[in-house]
Amino acid sequence: MAKTQRNFICQSCGTVHRKWTGKCDGCNEWNTISEEIVEAAVPKGMSLGKGRKVELFKLEGENHETITRHKSNMAEFDRVTGGGLVPGSALLIGGDPGIGKSTLLLQIVCRLSLTGKRCAYFSGEEAVDQVRLRASRLGVTGASVDLASANNVRDIIATIESDSQPYDLVVIDSIQTMFVDSVDSAPGTVTQVRTSAQELIRVAKRKGICLMLVGHVTKEGQIAGPRILEHMVDTVLYFEGDRGHPFRILRTVKNRFGATDEIGVFEMAHEGLVEVTNPSEIFLSQRQENVPGSAVLAGLEGSRPVLVEVQALVAPTALPSPRRAVIGWDHNRLAMVLAVIETRCGIQFSGCDVFLNVAGGIRISEPAADAAVAAALISAHLQRPLPEDLIVFGEIGLSGEVRQVSQPDLRLKEAAKLGFKQALCPRALKKKGKKAPDLNIKRNELGSTGDIMLYFADHTEKLAS
Image (tube, rainbow, N blue to C red; front, side, top):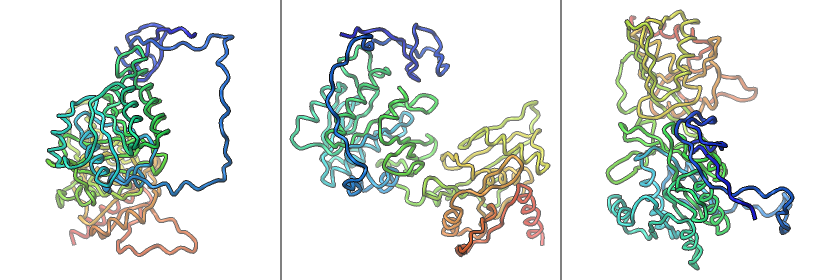
């Protein structure tokens, strides 16, 4: 029989150390290493025993695309998951504390139960009465949902398997509070999280149950625990948002049954999370007119076009090292765009503080925002506002060229729908035999960042005349 051994495992990244050290060599975090007892490997020379033969199948066979998904009747959530929850799948949702993960899952569970699905909600952080209080505030007390406050994975599995009528959806809130009593380590440790998730997923796959796990996040925004947890599940969602804004973004990071980088937009209200069907209109609702440093980006999140306002402020500074503050965009990307503008356009930012903000609390990561950021910075530096009916998008290269981005017609279509009349965008690629669609929007094509400067000069002359 294999003997147990003691390992020192980092609770942040899962790196195994031979002895305790104050700093982890894998993630460079301090005071994250703890001692855990794990099963040793099978000694050399010992046999694992004879296994049973695994049944093999051909690639050609019955088409399983007819599997019906569990739709929650919450359009934003169904969009993010690829059209609904797949039976037998495991879904992991992470987010900052207090962002609304438990509220979202309770609303989804209650909506699914109203469609005739059998749902169970296991909370390891709250008592049953506390979950009922939240349900009362959300106005969903009439839903038929089975509640329990439990932490022991063995008890949860026994409860799921004991009922003759199987569950369609099981929610575990959260996986860091669960423990397997055969593992000699505290709940939340790497071994407990990995073992608990493995046992729950195994039962979900065998029973055809849709399993939803809530995961805590670290201060860097990553899901706490071993990275293998994200590989074990079928779908990984992140619930993002700023405490100062009512909007919440549900983003797909991994999805075996749908597209990634899809987003769902919600608004946190007193009655819970409310769907935002037209996020572009909401993000632009408080936009100021004729203000220098403001540009509208026609972005793309997954398959959804989203229009957001990019705000820039350039102010003189007496500090030897000017400030570069960014909210909602990559700090390194801003440094690159500033360097390109200084080199290719001759505008100097070395004696100025630069502040950049993506309004609405949303975070933009696609390169198509480069041109909008450049236009906002040039507008703020020259103190010349951009036209109110103008959108900007395009990727900027180090040589100053503006590169083509994906699905420009979809971006222009969304802008035209909201009343925008002109666009600063990369030069359209001419395709043989294809005619450009008439989107009722004037395209001002960009070949380089210098074309943005030319547009400002032309626009100023038109205003003066």
